[in-house]
Length: 224
Image (cartoon, rainbow, N blue to C red; front, side, top):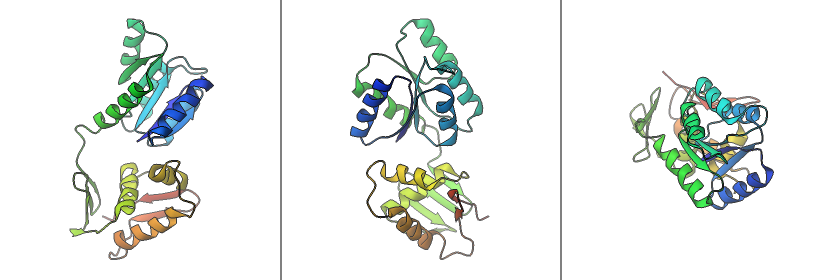
């Protein structure tokens, strides 16, 4: 799970960074509404934790803009010191999925984020289909042109990240963060696993699906 936290209080940001890191959850932080909105539109986060009172662009406007401009539904948890019913209703009207009032227990915030990330998958297809490629999330079974692809764990996770983002291009740093968070090995593991994935996904077939976008990153392309 990757969480975007849009919060202008530096002390709270530091506390949340430590909280999520302890749970192995990747996080990115933004200190104002405009920066946070752009980050949410640029990267495939699983949950956005959004403060209501932000400089430049408040949480309600950020939420409204994200709902209007994002191509997919991103679960949003409103985080605020306001506990009046009208404030909560305003948050839900603008598109928030959940609401947590400060001060809060860290364990509750993590639990709510986990629940939101899973709720987002309810009703979504178990299978991802891109061209001749089929990925079944239930059993991690990957097929191309009806042929089962024997992918090891990390190569499979790499393919899932690329497939979830399809047709968007992911940067090298996005892929590294999605796969290893802050526990990145000292070597260059991404290069190795990209090579491994290509050997299984592309080498036996006439049309490659894993593309390098020079100067940008990597993406999947449908082959049919």
